Image (cartoon, rainbow, N blue to C red; front, side, top):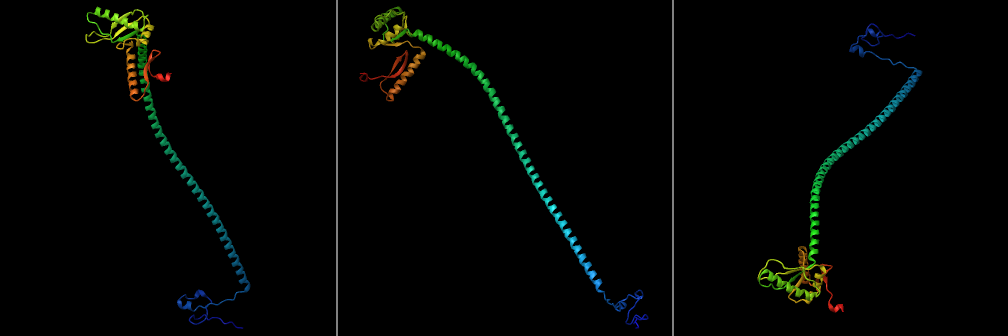
Length: 296
């Protein structure tokens, strides 16, 4: 069987050129090239399919592994990011705590400054108080000494005056001093004998104050004992009404008696009744007097 060959002489006609190196690659030549499909055997096709499936499986496996690795990496990155966020939060909290602590320290320092100022002020005040206390103690000691002396003087004067009585209401006689003194002595002896018949002779009798013709001065009568003066005063109701007899009082006793009389008058003015001044153990006091009808 003869084979049909392609002509080699001319390429302008139909056919094929076995030697492609001689083919002129212009558009005309290219358009005249024909392609022949060769029939591939079945075995080779199956091998290709198997290779393709194997290749696809390897690709899928590679991609799956890559995706798993990427997933692991992303998870690790996510965990690392979470850890970093937690560390940042802790750092922020620590920073806030430091700021708060610093603010508290500043506040404490300010409080310490104020407390220090107050302490200094208190110390200064204490020093002033100590100095004042020293001065006050000295003055108090001096005042105490003065008070003690006043008390001793007052007690001594009361002891001396307790032996005396004061008589008011005896008219003064005319004449010289000796005549007036003699007349006063006679009149005083008459009066005290009425109150106390066994009364001893007075040690001294004299008028209080300067002599004035138009004025009757009070008479001070001095006795040797306190008992004589007390008995006369207790029995003074036996003496004439125009004659008044009193205790010989110190200036302090007179002031106290004056206040006591004012208090008595005020209490009577306020409506109190049956009250009077009475000497109890040698001291005048306002007492409530029991009416006579109630005594019975």
